[in-house]
Length: 126
Image (cartoon, rainbow, N blue to C red):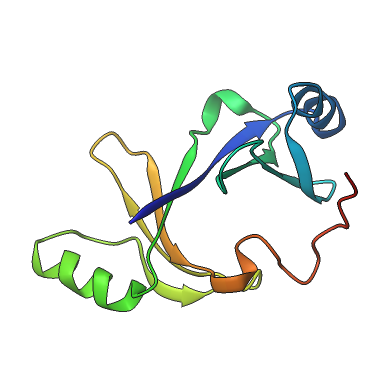
């Protein structure tokens, strides 16, 4: 298992992107509703999602596993209940969704090459 990213809700995307760029992160996806950054070290990423009211949302934690479907089946045999069984999303990640006991959304997923290099990735010059 590998921790991939945390998605944070933000109310002002341009201001938020500028702030994280100042902190030294590399912008790898930039849309009006969503931005994603790679960390200066390692291959972890985090993202921002536009929200009108950040107080009503919680972060979404992603855990990556190449054998997603089998992993979900194993978890189901242990009594884990899913809000969404594995499904290929429009952004090319296969995801399952479960809530932790506090209601935090956890996405179990596999993205393969699309994790860091989706077809819409912006060119990064260093």
